[in-house]
Amino acid sequence: MLLVVERLLQECDRVVANLIESWEEERDVERKLHDTANPYFPSLVATTQRKAAYVQDDDAPDPREIDKVLSEVAGIAGRWALFKRFLADRLREDIEKTSTNTPEPAERRTFSVPTTPTASQKDLNLSEEPVEALPRPEIVLINSCKCITLISTLLSKYYIPLETWYLRSVIDKAHRLSTVTASSDPPQTTTTPDDVFYILKLVLTRLLSTGSNECVEKMIETVVKPIVERDFAGVVRRKMEEIYATGAAGQGRSGVTGAAGREKQERENRNAFIIYLNDLDISASHMDTLIKSTLSSPIIQQSFADDEVQPAQAEFSSLSSLILRFKSILKWGIEQLFNQLTRPKLRSLVSDVYKDVSYVLDEDGYSTAEFQDVVRKRFIKAWEALVDGFKATFTEGNYAMFFSLAVEILVRPWEKHILGMKFSELGAIRFDKDLRSISTYLSSQTAFGDAREKFQRLQQLSTILNLDLEEDPDEFYTSSGINWKLSQNEVRVAAALRVS
Image (cartoon, rainbow, N blue to C red; front, side, top):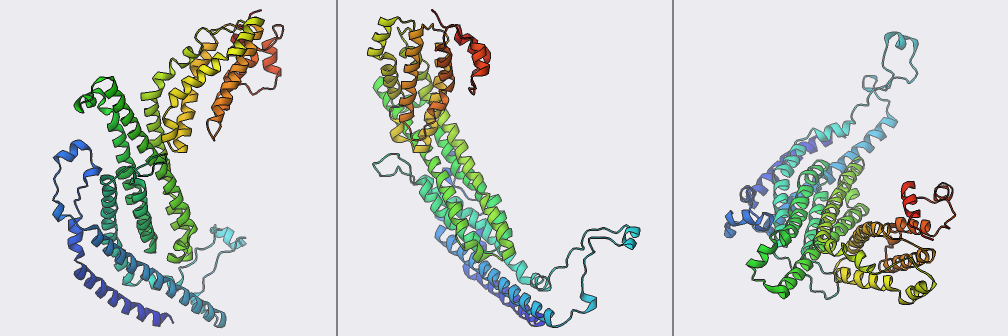
């Protein structure tokens, strides 16, 4: 059987070599390779570089032709991988059947060194490790044929460079034709993520269909990851940077003057920035879905031999690093937006809420404060003005990140302000009610509900302020069993705010 397969593979070498030679000539792939060697993609370069660059659109390759060539290369490689698996399985079955019926010649037998060394082995200081098994004869035979080299060269010479150009070209086109989605329902995004990930799924599916782990590893590590990170995520970040980079100079160039004009420009800038943030959030979700759906589909098991499936799955799973990259840029963008538009307004929020408010209350003062409920009402009004427009335009995940950041920044000056006040017994009770009502309000504004966690330090300050004057705060700190976020010194400072 081995002799028959050997002669069959020799004929395969001849046929495949002729096939590839005629295919190269018919598809004129050398010219296509030359045309795509030094590409220029206008949307993938910075604006300053774009002005100086030159390209002749008439000479640019047609992506549809490149796509057709790539599908043919992947088809050739995939059929060879299938034929190779078929031969390996049949030869293995034949060899196993033969070995069970015919004793193996002594000169071809391989033995493993026993795990328990004999006395003579100890004297000779022989290794106790088993002898490495020799490669299976069917694998040696298949790997010795010229088709292995022919297909590997086909993938490295044509497939990888052309697929690199194709992926970059469709990402460039997605950026150039990007428009805001027509849906009237928030959140708004652009068409770019859907366009890019539709093609990316096709590219990755075609890559896996080659049945070559070597090609899969090289493509994912040196092509897919860098291109998606640089040409997609990186370009989105650059667009976000350009929105606020020009500042007042940009407003002047666009003819924006007066308070109304500046307000309109700020609103447009904010909406554009948020749409890019939403694109990144959607992209992270698309990438996660693409990885999970591909790993759960049968394509890898159908395209690779049993011992090649796990490495292919592991390499494909490594694309999850792109999700982390999307989220990293997303976090940077939300922080930039927050610092540009929200943080300045937060600086005065606490002082405005507590303007003319005192927590040194007698019974009449407590009743008046209870009736007016000034702190809660002021806070809700100020908070709604602060987040106005964000909840409706952000994706749920982005709003959760923005909301969490806002609350985190808010509680710091709040603690500082509280530590500058004095509290009577009734005042401490009123403060606790104000704090709980605001915490409840903020928790009701989101589905992710982590607002209460960020109020833990303030809530512990309230707990200390509501201790009896006779109670020792140090003893309470050590014996209460509370998971303290405050230090013992901070507890003493808070206790000193109480007045009789």
